[in-house]
Image 1 (cartoon, each protein chain N blue to C red):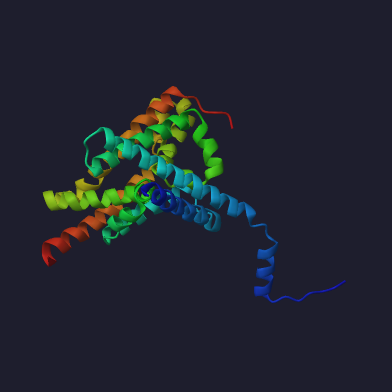
Image 2 (image 1 turned 180 degrees about the horizontal axis):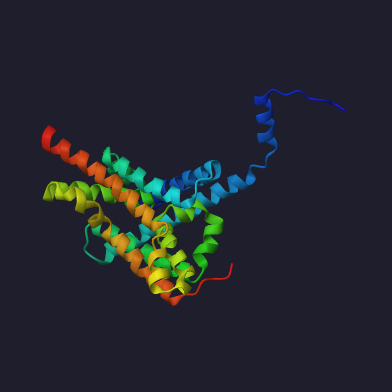
Length: 117
Length: 153
């Protein structure tokens, strides 16, 4: 069941992205930025936990899920450390994703050559 | 010669009818299927992690992200991810694998410029913006959250 909802929900988020690309000619970079910020906003108004219940990995794997983690970690850090959490929360929450992306992309750049296009 | 007068909205309708809409439908279909499949893969990885390790949901989620990022960087390196992206469009962009691809791809391309001036900065051509605007949004949300929870609750 979680696989079906992951597929449908994640697929729909990607479909929306595709429609945005075709209708507005926004570049992929802007789409990625838009999705992350949208995730932060949805988490801020408190609906992203509900979305995760419905969409399972279909809601956590897309970049809106990354935005949700930024916002959620900010909330938790403020609850724990007070105002310092405003500065430390988001990157602590995103650390796993960002650090792994840096490490594996860096390794990929060392190991592989650019393909001819 | 027959002359047809059309009002502008009729003309717009006519243009829409005559424009082949199948490429867009096809692109949307593949974006949906491939994006959905990547999310399913994430669900599968998460379930395997939860099966073999005693972890809470959140930690398993972070490990899932790390696994997906690893796979994405690997497939970007061997050139498969870009091939998939040609078919999948936003289906390969919106998942976190697209974020990793956006880091690995320019880094590989600008490898020849060196470790410090090539790979280092190029990792962040797209990802930099994502991280900046994600954290900026979270920062302002953090201020609001702090003010509200401290003074109003």
